[in-house]
Length: 375
Ligand SMILES: Nc1ncnc2c1ncn2[C@@H]1O[C@H](COP(=O)(O)OP(=O)(O)OP(=O)(O)O)[C@@H](O)[C@H]1O
Ligand SMILES: [Mg+2]
Picture 1: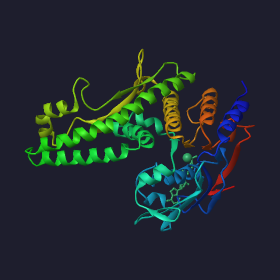
Picture 2: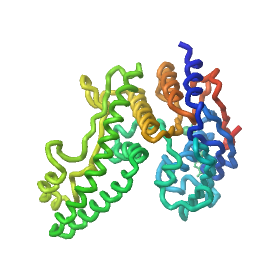
Picture 3: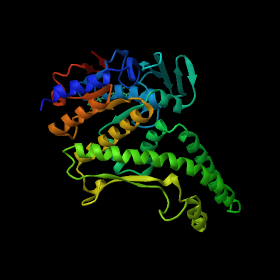
Picture 4: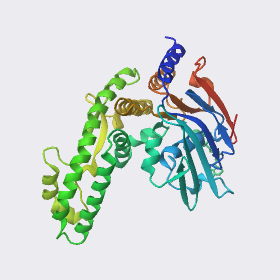
């Protein structure tokens, strides 16, 4: 099989339209990056260079555009270049049916200033809507090992982008939960008062999540089967955060004594979680190899991208940090081929251009990263 030809066909397929893509990126003062200005192409943009040259920092800058923070920790301080007071990220995005949008972010230790087309933006949800992306880093598979909150966040990111009311109900649910928890801590007299608000917000939130999970499971199964490296058909096992044989109202009522003892509301969609499970082998966390875990994360991201496209007609940007890590040649090829098949613009970092195996791909631009400067 000639992969390069396949990639070309797949990318051409997507670039036929005017899907979301970054036309211009400027970064200054973020970690090691100095006065970076690039014009990425539609297709694959590869950032290669030695360790510590600044490749991941470029992806961090792009991530900032959609989340207002970094994927390497919450604090701003480590991001701001030593000796400077702030960093800037500026980007021009183009998307079908819309005029070009400029997103600018200035981050200092005092806070973050975000502007879209010159107007200040206060809510990160607005930024997230403007710049949807899928990101896979060498640490992504850690979500299998870490707490449920990390998995829930990944899932809810997907729901947020395709269910218009999800964000509102999510906020209402959180507000009701906080009130109920405050009532618990105040002795429990008024706890039941908050149950109705909690249950009603939960119903809307869960309906959106359920629709998403249904689509996600189908799409994930398809991708999992396409990866030869996954010898076991892992599927998604979702748990909604309270016993399956009860309604949320029942679960809340029955656990009130426990909640009072614990000091917070135990059951509810705020405890939802998912696992990747293979029926014959068990939980991916226990049985999958490092490379297989990363393939599963890629499959999950592919499924999320597919749903975003089918339900919102939007194609996310892909950020792939250190793609060759943990993948053998065959898996690296199929990952790149599948991502190219569903995307318009991909940003990849690697220390070794040869290992990426992209020679001959026509829609490709390479940037050499050296001590925080790009060529
Ligand atoms: N606040 C900061 N000020 C200046 N330099 C910083 C700051 N934070 C990190 N760095 C430097 O930035 C570089 C890290 O950049 P980055 O993680 O993007 O490298 P990389 O090219 O992805 O490396 P690798 O191949 O090892 O993943 C290191 O040289 C680090 O010392
Ligand atoms: Mg790196």
